[in-house]
Picture 1 (spheres, chains in turn brown, cyan):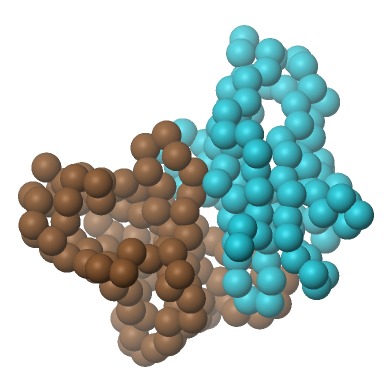
Picture 2 (spheres, rainbow over the protein chains, first blue to last red):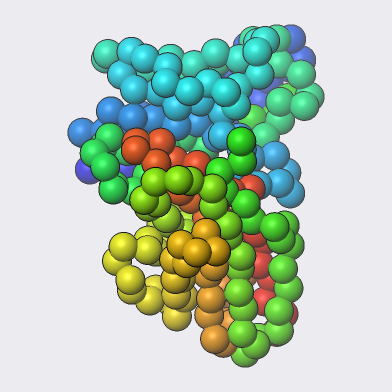
Length: 114
Length: 107
């Protein structure tokens, strides 16, 4: 089991472009969380998804940000028309969905908007 | 509503001194609590969880339901403990993380 895989590890985008961040959960995990970590800041919850469902997107900005976790393939966090303030590390975590189980984190994608 | 509160954003202690990282939670049910650690430029990893009642790298954490707290403690801090620490609450299937405390151990 390769663990939670995020790609790319580093992503550079110009202002106005789109950023697509991918997260492949651990095998057997059907729950995915996305978090944003700004420089010198803590971890901020963005969205919680199960396969084909968004369970809680209360931490996600209303505009430009979207997330999906299709039946097949990785979870995608999509940021349209990126701005400098979107520069951050984005972490994905996955969990089996069974009660009492821990969440496992990916190594993150560091997005830089220039 | 904030489910997990870590009141200290930054904490510095000298090597060999005791350290306590505070965590308070808000949940009416039976909580599952965790501490995660993130060393410089690495992924977050589980440090300990309250149901296992174990000590990892000298750290312990006791769940106090009366005070709704789950503070992380270590009697003698080491330089390699310098990291970001996150307290997390699992309710049902959803994880809530605190905003983290950055611990610096001064040699």
